[in-house]
Image (cartoon, rainbow, N blue to C red; front, side, top):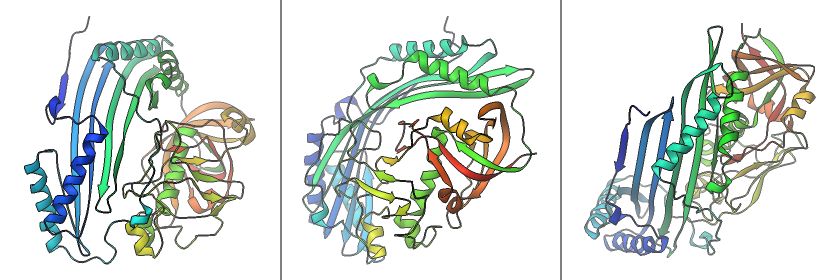
Length: 458
């Protein structure tokens, strides 16, 4: 029997105010831009986001939390020459829009001039907005979500007697609309959705407790992993960590499992992003056209990948996104720039206002097990703690846990260790990327084998 219930409803406006259809947002954007010009702006841009969501979390067979979300927001940025101001509101009434525009204009009037401020060039605006199949609303009730979460948790707990506790299982869904427009006459947007099932277990043996889990996330609920598979994987990963040992300090090959390997490439993207470059706070400063990775590595961006979590037909400046190589044969082909950073650097935007869109890491023919055999002796990292990357020098040092490997096989779990190196060396010593791609985010990579790193422990 369920003994407790926490019901949380986050309501920012009534249901009747929710604008669900993208074509209803476009006239609002146009009115906002017109109002900005009317109030004295020489250029303006506006973006709107609306959405609804449901999240249900259970723990130890009981409902812990139910959340309903209703969100909407309008942001407006105005330019008076090279002076910039912005303001936002969750009220879409004509009066509120006028007041918001007025607030943005007042800020711009007193702002300092910035020679690089302004809209992206008109000729770069997206003239075609393809349907990327990003909108798949999940009509699931709170009761159905609760039942799924309870089932997932029960499956995980039933896998092994050593699993004696739970950190919860959750089912969540969100569907929204994004729209953007500016005084170039551009205005467009798209609908999107995201759904997640997550399960985290706690196991105990001989007084030692370990925690781990698994989750599935995608645009279309029909593409989610099966509840049984998620629960079983959460249990397997949790139990596998029992009996973890510490390691003595050594220098060995390190294999980053796919879910944690994405962090290596996040640091790379930060290093080649415009804001890091014009601030001269990057370990890859002035490296365009040079060897950054091992020569077999290819990293490309695919913004128009169907159903992918990082897909977008245009960026936050309205600039059309396009597929391109960022790394080819290990050589840096281009930076990650929005309109502002491009002007600061005397370059052209790459359509990356808001970040990269589906960073695809080229992979080899080996899966994780084959990479473990190839490594032969070394460390398999399955979890990382903290953030230890110096973006100026490239020095890398993070807490980690995982498994010690000898003779191409996992020997025992390890914990309370640190893996360290320098990203410039690590990228050049990248031996192989596995084909076990993790599709649950914006960086699509398999497991990554690095030739040599320092592992610090006891």
